[in-house]
Length: 326
Image 1 (tube, helix red, strand yellow):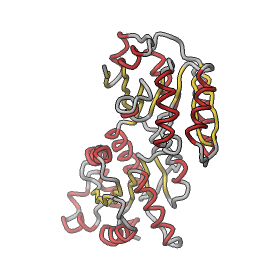
Image 2: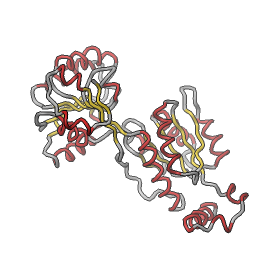
Image 3: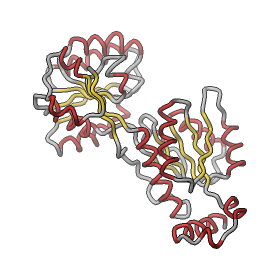
Image 4: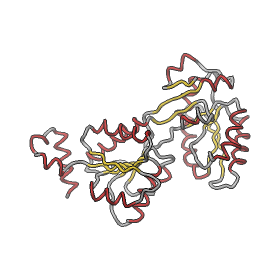
């Protein structure tokens, strides 16, 4: 019944009849509420800002900031206090905590949820009830095509090291790359291994003479401290191959790549706002549950790294990127 009333409320809102027909107390009673569960980083704040600016006050955002000490009790309290029409999960900690909350109450029904800014969210969102997501990883083809337009040499084969649970994701990216004449060459490693550094080192050595560039995934299990110090950094220091990374810091503070193609956090929020409006106009039901690709990205290039490796690039194309690191 409550959802039916809200559906009528939103229909009247779209017709511009709400202000004329309803009083202030009714506006408060029928307010549209979203519960945002997020981490404390500035990047996540930017996501929320993107949502807020696009929602234009039509949906009230109530936030829970997730820390290591956070528990499901905070979500229970927020549900009772705000009765959210939709839940927004920002970051892996938020996704994990909400998953635990649902597992504690398996027979309950839940409002729609949108997960975003979480690494490899495909792996988790299918375990949540009534949820969809926006990926954080940019498709390889998007990154490679952007890099190819700037480099002074062709890029036909790109190497990637991945764990076996990601095989479906890699195959999907291989299909996308093929449409642009790019072959994505993958080396698959076990999901769990006690010798990550040596396996990564061997994989990079195997790829080094067979590809034109590398695509480095944001997989914490392959980017452990030992793996970085004993495999990735030594290999990247010697290699003349350009590499694409998914985090800007891996192009600057930790020199793994010379190109970083990442989601625009503010744009992620705006994209989520569009999905919230779609759900609101559908009586707070998800129209689609397929995981979406991020529609807005930021491109970074480290020309100092390219020059150091004697990799040519077109200066007339640098205007295509958002930031040039020199």
